[in-house]
Image 1 (cartoon, each protein chain N blue to C red):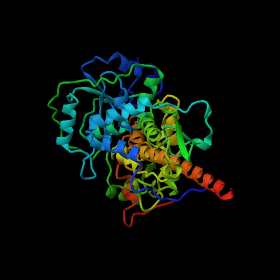
Image 2 (spheres, chains in turn purple, blue):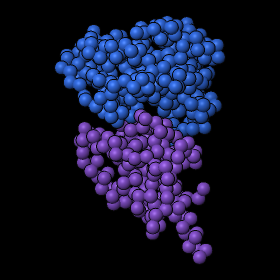
Image 3 (tube, rainbow over the protein chains, first blue to last red):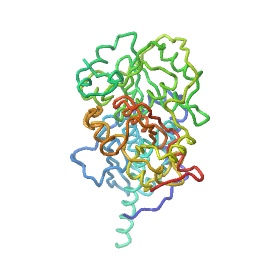
Image 4 (cartoon, each protein chain N blue to C red):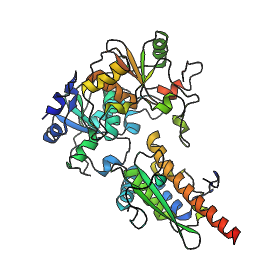
Length: 161
Length: 288
């Protein structure tokens, strides 16, 4: 699998940064409520994109919430993200999936490929275990990887035109 | 009804409760149900009616030193939960009670022995489609008076582990096979829970903690199944001192619970320094 390396943006994309800044500003009960709201608003990948059993190629490694991620290409080299979280206890995974979709879908593939995994500690602060952090970080990495592949694929197509 | 538990042949079956028993005691003032999870969002997303929350990162750990809370911190916690030393605590949580047994273990450092674990934890409660609520109960704060923390009986420190290794006594590494063999150290972004060296403490057998549970409903395996794993397969001897460890002592608290209560081993300790200490300890012996 080709990727764009480990480069990350100095700042997160604007919509994502804005949401993270709101989370930063909240006290703990408010932050928890906002994350629960994210989780409640999560919508699973539509059947037009994927059906169960979901293909293993889309499973997020190390994620104990059994998260899956898909990325389709939109107009103007943009990306649209989709997620599934199979574990009913995967509240944090659903909250993260909702945030990633809401703030990154519609952005250029190149920009999404360079989001920083620092999203996870900013969103959930430090009160997550290694196992949970691994899974959530892997979701971000999976999004980066899919966007990177799409970006490289688009670039290759252009170079051959 | 505790019938299912009674049939499983545990040595100390009194430390387990069934979901039925908990459902029948939701309004019992002498009982406090405590949820403790890996995912801090799970409790606020829905919990057993009347259950209170113990967050392992905030409530059980000292926020500066790597250690557990001291007596004063435990008294504050217990008072906030509205419990007294006579309250029967029932712990439950996600990940097959992994974090519930961790909280249970920390409560034992302060001698709160009227404590149980709900067999099957959150998973079984949900599978049985029992009620969950987002309402956080309000209990009047108490003035809990606790003894000083007593680590001697159930907690092992590195010097004791070194002596344990020298004496060729039994250790149980409850991490995954990849961690045990040193193939995995830590993940990107989480070096704070990593180690400079991979492998295991010399002489340790490897029994990943989750082998003790039935994955389909999170209940503990029967005593006979557990004996098959820990005694027959791994050769552990019940009467000998045993130290369990993992990465930071949470997974191994689950195995400590299994060996101590379900199988009745009298001398089991949890080494919470675990691999994050041992794998960084200059000169400590390691096997791969």
